[in-house]
Amino acid sequence: MRIAFYAPLKSPTHGTPSGDRRVAGLFMDALARAGHQVELVSTFRSYDAAGDPARQAGLREQGVALGRRLGTQWRDGPAVARPDLWFTYHAYYKSPDWLGPEASGVLGIPYVVAEASHAAKRAGGPWDIGHRGALDAIRRADLLLCPTHDDVEGLRGVVAAPERVAWLPPFLDPVLFRAAAGERAAHRARLAHAHGLDTDVPWIAVVAMMREGDKLASYRMLAGALGRLQDLPWRLLVAGDGTARAAVELALAAAIPGRAVVLGALGMAEIAALNAASDLCVWPAVNEAYGMALLEAQAAGLPVVSCATRGVPDVVEHGRTGLLAPAGDEAAFAALVRELLLDSGKRARLHDAAGAFAANERSLIAAAAKLREFFARIPALAGVC
Image (cartoon, rainbow, N blue to C red; front, top):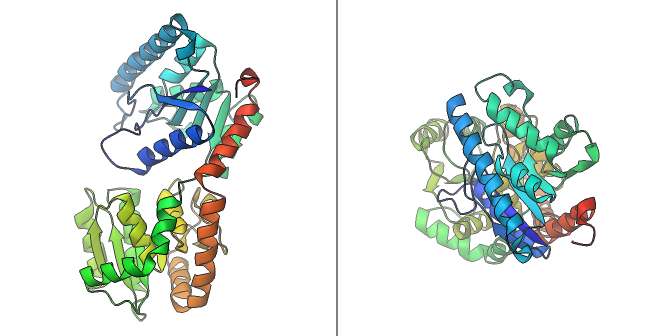
């Protein structure tokens, strides 16, 4: 089946690394693994960060026109080049999908959206145009794929046919991380030599962008929690960079002086090596949708301590692959970190389970199988899948 792929927030070819760009690429890979021919059909970005109605109206006009033009070109062109399905990744009020509903409507093909979200509180506000656009796309979709159970419940309340909403949990390609885990000793020795680290104490890994808002709030909560654990031996290794780096470094230096090593932005191979070399991934995930970095850590065999925020329980299984504190509870969060720092046997059990979980249940292969199953439910695809 030919699939037209589009990501209105950030194309998988966008120049700035991010979790959103990474997940868009993973969806393209999973669709290809499922046996489909996938084409990125547009890099048009509908994102409005400021809540500017005039900008949103302009983006809507451009996006609708582009969607109709694409649909018309395919309809009037050779049948062999025409997509059988339109697939959009991540549409919400700041970045609605203006293209997919138009193009799929012109062609009369199924319209699928992964990671759509509905925020009723945005109605009538600065993002009202984007809010209404996202809601229209949600209601027109033949299938909505949600990464968290929270999203499933939220969307089932606004669509006419709740059976069109399905849970597809976050996934990744575990190969790079599994390979890194197999070279743990070498990666640990290299990092120890480069940064003067003691290999006999636990290393705590963090991989997160450094920007204002929820990320900075997470770093500050992390600093506060680790500040409660200075009676124990450990080191913190942080991979990340961004506009709030100075504020992050200040918070860490004030709370845990001399304990943190900030490595800056790292590539995926370096992130995999960092995770494999470490003993624990610790991240509060303040208001985080679900946290791909937490899944990547588990893929390298790293137990996770986080908070049961939004979709984090869909990524980290409490008691099986990590431990989750109540959202925002710094004392409880610190207590769980202390528990795993003191219990190497429990860390080892979680290590094994985390690696198996990512490799067997949250892999590209597992996601591809689910996509085949979900597409088979769409009546218009009978005989096409």
